[in-house]
Length: 141
Image 1: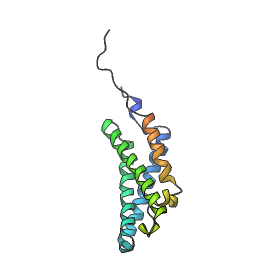
Image 2 (image 1 turned 180 degrees about the vertical axis):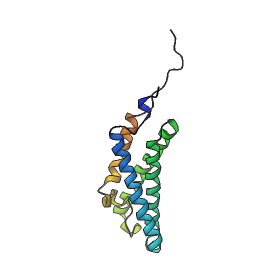
Image 3 (image 1 turned 90 degrees about the vertical axis):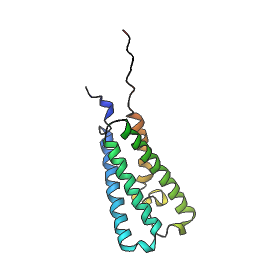
């Protein structure tokens, strides 16, 4: 019998995964257009948007997949996402010259209604709530 707790794509988790998928598509498409069309204007910003797209895509897949390995990958990508949005968000406010064009994570995701700042926090709460349970290995009767 499958453990219902092993699936993260249930209830609110479905909405969370859908938002990750939408951000993956939006960030990847945006960065593709920027890299192909005007890379020389702000290469770091456009590459960071591409990186964000890859992170959102990997987080989406990890949240959809079952198993301990995918659970760990979900944690790693979501923590990386939070560190990225806080770091880039802070740097884009402190020294705007570093980012002559906005990235997905600029000003904490302002261009995406601050969803990039809130989403990893919600993702970590969901992962904690849906953490795999240990299976007893020694059952004495």
